[in-house]
Structures are given as structure tokens and as C-alpha cells.
Image (cartoon, rainbow, N blue to C red; front, side, top):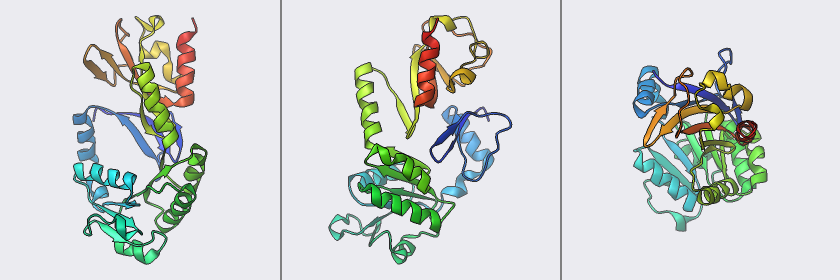
Length: 263
């Protein structure tokens, strides 16, 4: 397919891929590739049936409405569960009621959806709902909002596949402005970042630098001017005036910076 499996994500844990790593029902593959390569992957493995059920959004506030807008732009079906009648914007897309009420969830299509997004600003409620949804539908993909960063790990333990906290997103935004750079947070604790190719790497290839084994980061692209080489060959030497695009956890990123800083 041309895509490269660069990691495995399983409820808050990022694992560097190895040929003998087993894939289970909760494993999410983290892949890199061009749009065409990813489309080829989707067509080959026939995963489109997995998104027929739509998405349930818990909460019709700012975050919930923003999620709905993003899904609409991608032509994905969704339903918002909201208990405050004053927040109902479109009766065709909203279900009035408490998300903790099973009858309300049945009306919203709990048996048909493939993903639930929990957007409340109350972490205790989000933890409870994550546990509740995980018990009702073990196969669901659950994304939850976390107002306080200390609750991120608790939400993962409760069964959330992805957790996003305001603290981390805000820190990333500030870092990008200060560093005149761009760091993309795929999930809580998993970042895509750029780094000017160190002088010590020039003329060497990925095999020789052994970046993945030494740091846990994976190189997913090399940028030269405005052109990006996605999934570069491990035998292709690094060139001058290039920028590396990597993916890894915060700890892996720190190991990478330490590795390239040591002479």
C-alpha cells in the first residue's frame, strides 16, 4: 500500500512497532503516508463499513458543536445528546436527555454508533460516562475531553481510547508561537514534530543513525524546501538544509533532542 506503520496506540500507550508485535482488538495503528496511499489502504482493507453507524457526541456546548461542525465537513453522520433544552440547535441532530439514561442512549442509537465523543467540562462526569460506555459497548472508540491534565491517565484507565486536555493543547499552541514551529498533537502524549537535520546526521541514513532504537521516535518524513518525502527510504542519506518530521511521545522527543545534542 505504500503506508508505513510507525506505531501502535492502545488507550494512552504508544508502542514502537516491531515485526513480532501482536495486534489485538483494541490496537490502533498509527500510519504515515500520502493521501493516495492512505486511500489505497482503506480500499484494500475495506474498512468503510466501520463508519456507517455514525458518531454520538455527549454535550452540546462549544466543544460539542465544534465536533459536530468538523464531522459535517467530513460528511459523517452524528447525534448530539444534550440535557439542557436551551442548547438544542437542530432537533434533527439533537436528542434531549441525560447521557447516563440508557433509554436516552437507545433513542440516540447507542447500538449502531462506532464512536462516542464526550465533551463535558466536568472531568468526574467524563470519567463516569467513559466507564459506562465502555461497559455498554466494549467495541466503541471513545474520545474524551479532560479539563485537568491530572485526570488524563484516569480517563485512559476508565477505557478512553483518546483523551485531549486543555492544558496540553494550550501548551502546544504557546510553544508553536514561541518557537515559530508546528507541533501536532495526535493524542494526549503523542506528538508530530519537526527538527532541523543535525549536522552529525548529514551523509548517514536512518539505519546508521538508529533513531528509533535509541530514542523511540520514528522519522515519517524529510522536508527540503517545499517538498516532503513521506516515509523516506532507510538507506537514503540525510542531506543538508533539510528538516526531519518525527512522531513520538514527549519522553521520546526528549530522548531524541538529548541524542542529537550529544557530540
